[in-house]
Image (cartoon, rainbow, N blue to C red):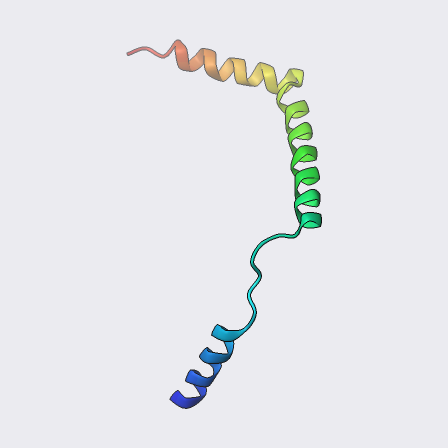
Length: 65
């Protein structure tokens, strides 16, 4: 049993590993991150969310000590 585990470990250890993303993957990741940031910015700056955030901050600053 231990021979099989050792052989499998050697195969996995010697298998080629990914060294990182390629240029195309970086481009897709960057575009996706920019799109997500744009959507998040629109949501946070919308009237309802902005009002809710101002209310939360106002309540936190008016808390009695």
